[in-house]
Amino acid sequence: MKIAFPTQEDLGIDSRIFNHFGSAGIFIIVDTETGGIESSANLDMEHQHGQCQPLKALGGNTVDAVAVCGIGKGALDKLRGSGIKVYRATEGSVNDNLNLVKSGLLPEFETEHTCAGHGIMGKCIH
Image (cartoon, rainbow, N blue to C red):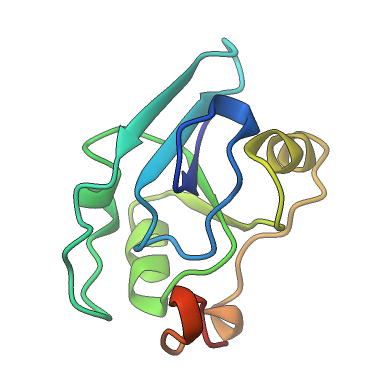
């Protein structure tokens, strides 16, 4: 399974999960079967609030899942509509959250937890 994690810097699996999908500068993509790790720049950084195009943001990379701390309802619906699972990540590193996914301990993102806007320093308002 390929899983994308939104981050602000490319430190591989040591990268810290960023607090919002659409505002992340980079996605760290991990292939759980091969152990391969790659990074991809967010190609949809300049979107207006509520207009995120998550597949464009992922730069055409095919993934099976995304693990995020925060995401808007529109982006969540678009990812799910494309058959991509969306997990609700915890604060911490890509590796921390990868281990939680592998252990079955990271829940899928629920619509009622999506962002309703942005507050101080881009943090999501839930």
